[in-house]
Figure 1 (cartoon, one colour):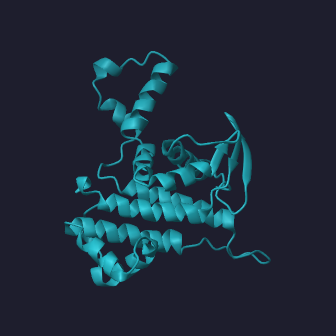
Figure 2: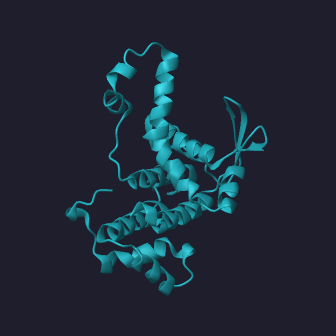
Length: 234
């Protein structure tokens, strides 16, 4: 997120909301205050407040409402679709590096080693390098990598292919990013995040998803605290 002074928040007004957003991670107010005081710069404190408050408003306590006669105002698969988009967007926003699309990334490389691109196989290789080094999925993977082994296992067990849980948190992060992108770019609702089991046919077999929104929110909160606790990023 930008450090532009126009976006600095009023600490007195927004810190209580940040504490509410992350209440599951701190046993009492004193521990939250101690954590907040450990953030070493005004920029880090502002980034923390913005991310925590946006999460509270847009995701944790934010629902998509519809005003259609005879319909419930909050429909889980609609509101959860927007919540997943919000979570991924907040994770992406934590990167200090500005976004570059694949073309921008390509043209910055040494043209003598890149062009001409011989075939589709070489193009895919380059795109995989882009995703690994600069793509949005990389940011999601790095975020979820900070979770505890227990939480990683719980998330991976929630998505199974042919009865086998996802093999790594990297795969879970890719799964979330992909269902988010399907909604953003193809208007496919995120029905995989629900209180009910969801079965679908994927490229590698039957995908059984029991990924509750509550688990995702808990994982995000823990990951956010871990992100700001990581002093190597200061």
